[in-house]
Amino acid sequence: MKDLKIFPKQRNYIPQDLTIDWINLEPIFNELLTREIQDVEKLEQWLKDKSELEAALEENFAWRYIKMSCDTENEQLRNDFQYFAEEIEPKISPLANDLNKKLMNSEFVNQLDTDKYFVYLRGIKKSLELYRDENVPLFTKLQVTQQKYQSITGAMSVTIEGKEYTLEQASNFLKNTNRALREQAWKTIQARRLEAKAELNALFDELVVLRHQVAVNAGFENYRDYMFQALGRFDYGVKDCYDFAEAIEKEVVPVLKNIAENRQEKLGLNLLKPWDMEVDTSGKEALKPFENGQDLIDKSIACFTAIHPQLGEKLATMKANNLFDVESRMGKAPGGYNYPLAETGAPFIFMNSANSVRDLTTMVHEGGHAIHTFLTADLELNDFKHCPSEVAELASMSMELISMDNWDVYFDNEEDLKRAKREQLIDVLKTLPWVAVIDQFQHWIYTNPTHSVEDRATAFKQIYKRFGAGFANWEDLEPQFENIWQKQLHLFEVPFYYIEYAIAQLGAIAVWKNYKENPAKGLQQYLDALALGYTKPMNEIYETAGIKFDFTAAYVKELVRFVKNELNNI
Image (cartoon, rainbow, N blue to C red; front, side, top):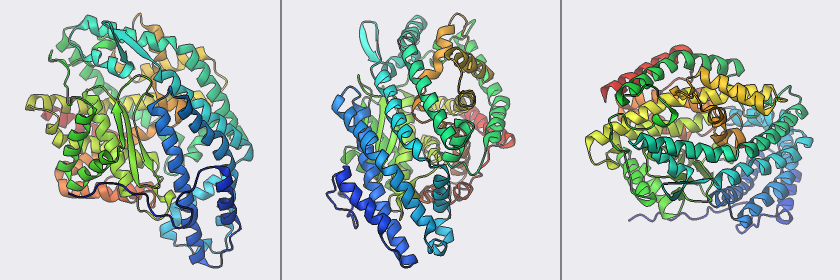
């Protein structure tokens, strides 16, 4: 059997046993800053050496973040994370900017291969434009402050029928066929969230102030406009986001409204309440695609192997190297992520499974990210691996759909498999309006930076209603309704990282369409696109995947029609 153990890559520039502290790092940065570069070959070697240092620093930070999110109650792990954020990053930032200047001022930069370095150099130029010394301490403050969200939400638990659950575990009750129990569970979960409402509002107020100051320091009127530049959105602008939201409102919301009306009819209800939106309309108990975390991992390895043996091997390698933490437990941060380990070339998958179909979807989603990490591991520069979110989420959301043909590993009978596929396709459509809500909400927040807590609640309600408000009746649930946004980690930790999910969702539907028409070709195009990392402009990466980088109303309509047809054919 092939040895799946991952061994540290051999370093060629920095010491193999480098301890990450400033005493050891400063001489390395100084050597890079002062090194004489005599020709273009020496410049490329300098770029490789700089990249090796960046990868080591990124992986060190990654492990600090991973360990902290796995155990938010461990003070030492929190201190280890804060040490990097407060003592290392603020010293690196100005020197990294100086290294960027050194690169762009080199007499040999114009001799670099244009095709190979175009995207990279474009990003460096943008970083130089946005850099301000006075923002370095603000970024440090933001890094530490926004992590408080994990501590607050990681401590949340509820008691239902005499047993304590994390919120992720408790959400399984929303699939229970007993409506009274569903209502009790939903209200209990929301009551726990409302307990933290004031604390999270105060935290968010602080983040808005800090972010707005970052934008002003960089010469922008607001943080929204700053972030469009900082995120490297070279391929679309603010107006495109507004137009996309209108397209979703016009083409997707009516479809979901119709699905909700059918749900209401099948359940025999006068009104659909928020606790009626997850239960199966057939009257059957919730699907259980796996028994526990290890079973989820093993079945996912089998699923990926069925798609292609090399994909299964990637997940098996992760299992062999303990690169999963998948089960929900007390004190663990909420949500899920795939964290690339920049130097090792493998990823870590973190999630909060509670034996639901959504957990299965999360696993294959993060598994798509994981495959992306492996495919880009050997790209020449670390920055070549830093894909924009529109590409990163194409990797994960496409895998959700591609993997469906092999979900029989999770389900014993055909009817359960069909139920799971129906749930998944409805969730694909539901993703689009929720993304529009969060994106439009952020546009409002940061273009109105002096807003009050009450203003914010009002704005959220107006936006949420525009996109269907979850297609449930919220009468007599005003406090819960206006507080729904606080569950979205991205708003607190990664601002403006959300519209990408909708853009990538359209791309994923198109990838899946290709895959269904020609599995071998569709899969290869998808993998070829991921292997590019960020060495090509976004539209070329999408073209390599055999799809269009397009989120116009016409394209939304075309792909939504395709999903509807597939849903009807199950």
